[in-house]
Amino acid sequence: GAGVSQSPSNKVTEKGKDVELRCDPISGHTALYWYRQSLGQGLEFLIYFQGNSAPDKSGLPSDRFSAERTGGSVSTLTIQRTQQEDSAVYLCASRQGDSNQPQHFGDGTRLSIL
Amino acid sequence: GDSVTQMEGPVTLSEEAFLTINCTYTATGYPSLFWYVQYPGEGLQLLLKATKADDKGSNKGFEATYRKETTSFHLEKGSVQVSDSAVYFCALSREGRRALTFGSGTRLQVQP
Image (cartoon, rainbow over all chains, first blue to last red; front, side, top):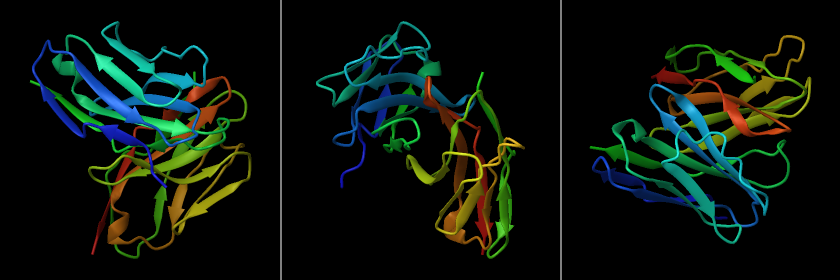
């Protein structure tokens, strides 16, 4: 079956611009996560959505970052006024069931800020 | 807080050598433990998991045993192949802390 799909796969933009990254989770998965993978920081949790509950935003690094999940399915991560330190690979994952179940990852969006 | 510590890489082995990648964790309660693998240019793929003490996860010749007494989840494979070259991440999840906590990753390079 289809896995987690992320788009675009690569994004190059100028400092100060806004970007939107999209994640299409596995159908039926109620939990959705965003992580950031960068050379100096490893894998960092950003935000978590579970069903209709309020999202856990505790990992967002600044108020320039926001995310939404529409209809319990597709999610968009938005970064406003991008900075060079935002350059990283942004990974989305989805999961069904409880925390004993594994998260399934997309291939990520590689974001480069010039 | 929760943390996962992995051995530093890169680990360089010859084909058919024995592999061990050490992983230890710190967490309250009873976390679930995972190994993920990342091939170049790809996202993370689940390799194996264990959800309680003494469980052994296994897949594609890889194994790891959940050792609560030593808070470890070391990854092993008896005979590595060139195609196993990738970055391996140890991770834990815990009720009440729903996101995965990852180790820093260990790059494995297998030479023919």
